[in-house]
Amino acid sequence: MKSGSGEHFEQAYNAQASVETASRLIVGTRVTDQPNDKEQLVPNVAAIPTATVGAVGAVLADNGFYSEAAVQAVKQPGGPTVYAAVARTAHHRTVADLEQRAEPPSPAAAASVGEVMAYRLQTQAGRALYKLRQQTVEPVFGIVKEVLGFRRFLLRGLAKVQLEWTLVCLAYNLKRLHRLGAGLKLAAVS
Image (cartoon, rainbow, N blue to C red):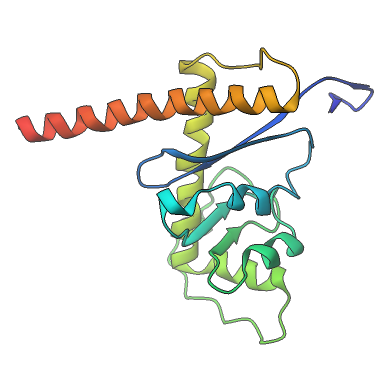
């Protein structure tokens, strides 16, 4: 992959994780050697085993994963609804973000995928759902890096790195399941 300012290349991998919003458990893992996430939405959704997770109702993705082709591919009949930012947004909130707003008008029938996606994220339900992305997947990667101490792959080769990433995600899930179980035990004692 190109590194830094693009002046040199490094042997690197792009680790992907799909996270369930309610439990914050990792439900799908992938590793790719492609640096850009634009083409990773479809394979990431396909990596979620629906036999164990059930049907995926909504996919929340940042704008790095958004492309019209990817949204169209995921949106097959019976597929999940995609909520992805179509442009970069600032991380700070403004007063306008906090004010109550009326629902935006529905896009025209001939609207592009981008216009439909922008509308979907401007609705109250869309904003509330998309806000879950930030508090779901970002903490998972923070815990993997800081708590588990996983910052780089020790193995080389895509197949071996995929196995290593699967083991790291399994360790995270075991830690998370223990934490969820401890919460249930404390609730039962109270």
